[in-house]
Image (cartoon, rainbow, N blue to C red):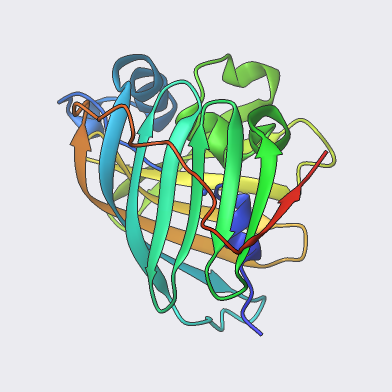
Length: 211
């Protein structure tokens, strides 16, 4: 049975780019602030893998993402199986073609104090997270975001920047498992069509509305 815990947490999970800026000259928390302020939309590719406490990995997922602030995003897994999380800014839909099921939630209910709030939102991070710098590693500048809420579902998320773009995210969940996401081919502030974030459940699928 496939698991998509990390996928749900993440986005529910992710997306980024910032204006040209020398990444090595600016601490990662400041790069994050500039990313939120200056990048209103983005598209790109991702790979995602969940690791257990022994660093053993499940098969990696890959796909494409897009977003437009505030709260509109699409996170589409293509391989090894299809899944979709999409938000029109008011409702978030998670579609699993294999299960023929759509789960529907409110944006506030789905994003809350999650990594998606950092990447897709436009509010104050200080209200939901404690942000701190981490030492550089793997050629990236790092920060850590720790949720202030005890029921956020994850312990922290580390975000690594390269050339002023968030390039890797590592989320540690409450079960001691790490979800790692690598981002690539990011395009900042593209023009996205009005239907980019619209979603209509396919005919014949079960729709579960979460309160």
